[in-house]
Image (cartoon, rainbow, N blue to C red; front, side):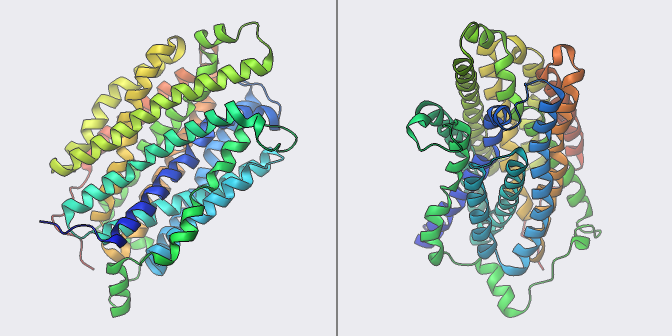
Length: 443
């Protein structure tokens, strides 16, 4: 029987949960605010080449920069320790998001989104390694990693709520750059996770396993080359490819949904003949409402994954529970209801969120078991940041590039093509996914 959690363990779980929640809070902010932000900062019309190009850049460039620096952050996590890097990364993304709310140009917004992404990319790796080493018992570790990562989807709900509140009550808040735009207040709200962290930081311990090996002088030296040694090569290549597919589905389809909603016939009917400010408010409120269904689906998927991970031994089988239905259902959601049926889209996006977002929790559970302590941060970071953030998020740019080529410049059709491709690749790659060893890797 496992002993009860200590006060320190509870404290670490709370901080990790806040970090996971606001990771996704920061990432899912962009789909909600990109349309009004671009309309204000560059005055471009949605659907035009200039508008679509900046949408693609805002999705992809921060992810690319974040992925590259996130890989460095994973290396530093192995060299400097989990706690120090974790705290620094949360402070970086919180204050970058705050500053982004005061952007005076599209270039300033892009740069601050890049620094936000760097913090987010590093935080995920440091938090997962930290939690994995705090709980040596495999079943308890699976449970803790699963349920703390479920707070990521709570972050999606929180940002949807923050955006909705900004739309409703922004006029009562202090003016920013001469206006009361909801997208600015939503960005500023990203500073929230820094506040409890500043108070709790002195009480957070280092990972006991990492610290013990460091003090004993038995901690190996991390290197990227070691990830491609015969022992780890297959794991590194397959997880990097599959992580890219998970992110490809999210960035190539799901995150475009708030931009798709305003062009749907039902929304067009609701805004017909109304003044432009009223039209924008209706469009943004409807997009936020649909996004809420997606986030509820994501939260459901993460909890479902956490439960299944405890009882299903084979990691390939666990992954396929979400991959195979996603391969069939999600492209159909974008090919059909995302174009002309708002009510059915709400159901479809719930399922799409459930099947796709659960995969992110899978990787948080799986990767710590595949590398020893001295390579854990570096290995996780390579798959998450090079695979997920750099390669996977490029799907957003593919979707925006395909949109002008689709019938009626349909973003929904473009997203459907992309999500079909990445789910197919991921499902095939799963045949080569290594099963974790029964015991943690030794140095």
